[in-house]
Image (cartoon, rainbow, N blue to C red; front, side, top):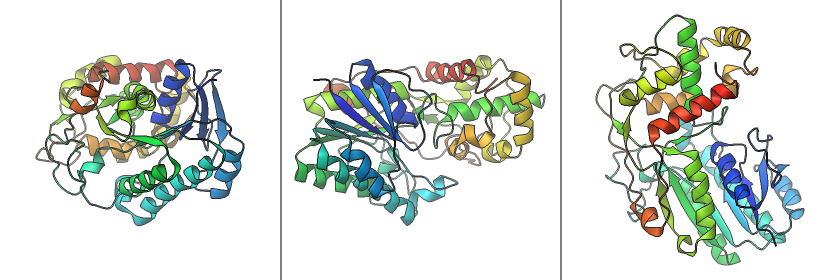
Length: 359
């Protein structure tokens, strides 16, 4: 019998990658999301429209699913403006309720064996104070307002009550092909570069104080979802995920500029979020000039332009506290995939150009 996995949030960054990873290995994939995924074209992948905030819709859809043995939960609800919503009680409760709506309905008609849940490095308290260096999965929970703990506590209790296993993954700054999502930098950088070029300006770095960072290619995250679902050692465990190296934006910036056929210049600190949203008219002329797929700026960047300001440390005079996580645990468990972060970022910029999302 073919294995069957339900991917919740399949139109998003990790959901898309996870669906591709499972389908590549012959799994039957049910891709659930409100809007149809744009990047999933495989006979093993079937899309179902689903609003996780609607418990009645979850009950109706899950009642029609048969034989689902695994769930990869990648869905997330974010408020406009992104960062300020991370501690908002309404956002926290909505994300908790979404997971509950789905799992409560799913176990009524399917024998679930394993659930993979996505968190992130906010689990280590980076938004409320300096993180320990490196952050390790074994360290005590940092109590602060976020939906991770609400979801995790529910999942642990639900898994015990319904006799299934789970794994929690914590990727750091995911990089991939999806546009219109909440936290993905390549589309933002691609649009920023196109606007700069149209104004006759070089591709200057817009951020603040320099620092070393970590990122993870979404293909690695998708494969980690598959690995965690199929390896006994991952049951009940939490794992950090990165590419396996650190990088600096200013060190990477020349390669980004070369990929986009632009020249660099002296730093020009500015809010990427403000810069982009003030130039929708210019963007529409770029779309017409280069025969791009017709998208508004909002349709391309989602909420990721706010994420760009955070990642670029816009406005920071001194380097922000380091955000480094250890990936020793998952490597020692047997998942050793790595990526070159510079090559990863440039790969997805080229992919956006190939698909005519950016010029």
